[in-house]
Length: 216
Image (cartoon, rainbow, N blue to C red; front, side, top):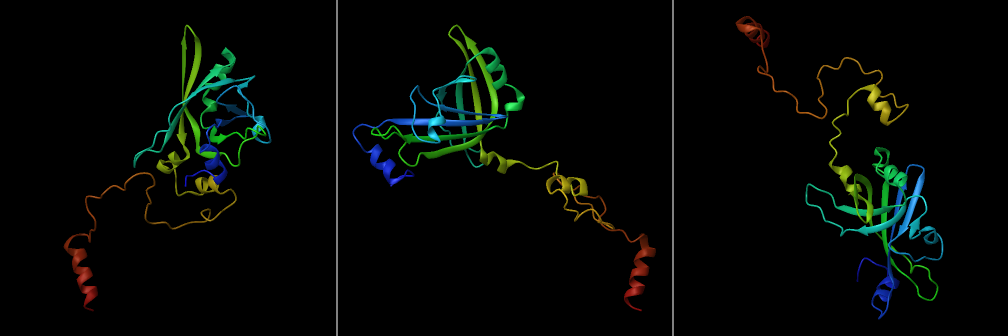
């Protein structure tokens, strides 16, 4: 038994099977849906995936999915063949960073031309760092894609125990707007400094006053 459906397992066990990869990149204002070849699929929503997008180009390669360690989430590298200089510049723009990326693997039903239910979602992440490369054969754009698990490693160093920051996360929630009389300072995103003196009674006079109060 694998992570695929029973129908997928049966298809993959056959003598002849057509396997496809489909990737969707939700760019700002545009959903880029590409197949790993020049074929076409039938049936919604898979019929919207194409081998070459007229605006942004085609998928050149998808590197092997790399497992992460205890301090690193899985990552993926994809290479695109941009349709034009404008497409290459747009794809490499800083505004594209963080765009959601989904990757599926599926098999085609040879009788209908539609994917066998259900293609497996094998990776979910977001665009990270672009690398634009050019040689005598043309130009390519390689993108590092970080897993959604990267978010688990964020330290939230900018978080603050203030009403303004609280409402930036939960608009209209005024639980911190009337907080007064806070004596202890709470440190966010850093370790609290260790004071040189932890308690002081004001010399022998303070100690005497304390002792006198204990035995009155």
